[in-house]
Length: 254
Image 1: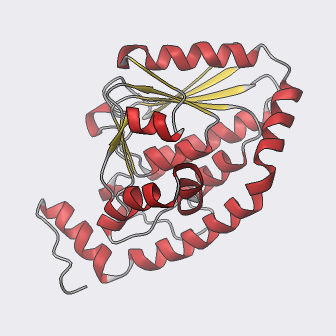
Image 2: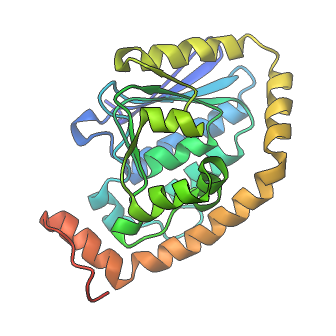
Image 3: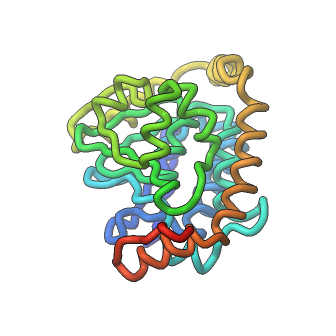
């Protein structure tokens, strides 16, 4: 069975992380499937809304580290960058249903969603600094915009988890529900949206995002350059080596 399940019904495309045994950690092949799904949804007039969802126990643990190290993103056409461009420029409504851990890109992708519903067990984290890296998905721009600088600094510099209530307080999520109801809640809202005039949905989203579209693209490009450079530097090598060796990293000499 595929690690990304794609289902279309009543104008709603649902993309489901389906790698529970690996905490829905994302491989290059999964990024490619997500990017392809978004491209299909963008091109198909019958698809009006996209929903991202995981399992009631986990949304996504972020990048699959082993796969990431074996297939690091090398060009703008790498699957992860195709996915980020796809979600950041997608013109139709995007909803996310998040329960359990949402790590790294599992959190940063949410800043490109229009509506986010969280289980009361949701835990968001952006531990890029702890891996010797920098933020991605234009999160270095979007997180301070949404959360304010000091809370963004806490989230991005410390890289520690924050939970559903805090995410609701800063506006990252729209509503908190029991984990067993998160996906169903997102699906119900998606169907409400799918019943509305698609031209109005697209134009309203365009107008709301117009002021930051160019900024997001520029920030994402700059982050990508920095991320690629830092991935080859000693701090990242130490962080990933420690992760694979199941030990605490030592950054005292990097």
